[in-house]
Length: 81
Image (tube, rainbow, N blue to C red):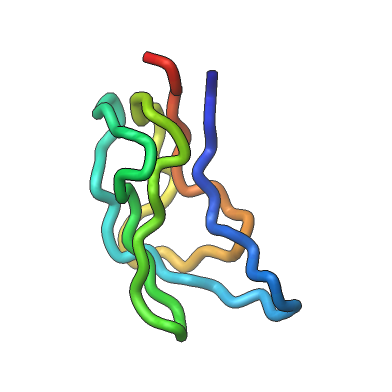
């Protein structure tokens, strides 16, 4: 099953972008649920986004230095492999 990792939308109304600092895995690499896969930074500081499932990275849709907004897809993975 295909699973997308997206930048979470904030609870409050403000929609703040974040910048991609580092993508820890390349396409075809396996990851485990909860493992950090993308390092981000915004005005609140640096944070890692965890893999939403165990599986294999299919496509990375962002690159370091890229600014993204909440809801944007960061990577696509295939779970259950």
